[in-house]
Length: 243
Ligand SMILES: Nc1ncnc2c1ncn2[C@@H]1O[C@H](COP(=O)(O)OP(=O)(O)OP(=O)(O)O)[C@@H](O)[C@H]1O
Image (tube, rainbow, N blue to C red; front, side, top):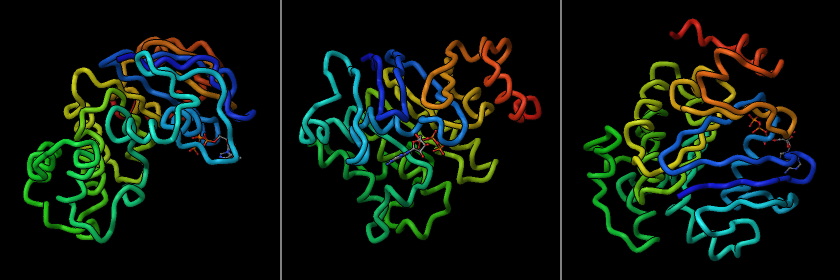
């Protein structure tokens, strides 16, 4: 199922943003802090704060998401649309065992999953009875991923999912995202770190001051950046050091 964003604007903070992500495609959205990456993601999820309004068009398959009722959107969220944020505790209930939490999206959408299967798929076998505070930051983000992937979403959005983790754990989570995402699922991967995006995505969108200023294959953008800003991001990245 294709995500098609056309002329998306959010107040004056995101301006005339257009892109598509096909089934199974992994697309990175990069740009410095404040460039509008999160607002773009929240517009797709229908989670913009009340004071901000999105205009334009966001289609998932043949459905228009902008203007969809909250009831219909909440049916899509956690099912066809899933999102992973930087800080796993924002998505976890501190007082609920993780086994119950990972099966919750299935329950809400009328599906039954075994907690052990979902946790096993993210390398967390045997942790179903743990509470979130008993796990490390990387393990918690794995739990969040298990929840996000439980219903095999058409689109997974990851907003800086590894920024709060140390480098070794970061690369484990990136490997896991690539391995655990179903072939049919599209991925929008948000990061300010080009090296991280390059390791996950085949296509990159570069955002500056609310606009997409460059788009292309990861290889093109990394080897022959057209925009001055992309060249700056490249120079600031430790991409070379990680090769
Ligand atoms: N509720 C809001 N009301 C007004 N302005 C906002 C609101 N939320 C975000 N902004 C502004 O919109 C701009 C884009 O924010 P956004 O969070 O999308 O940036 P970002 O690229 O995701 O940055 P970061 O990497 O720091 O998360 C910023 O200048 C931010 O201050």
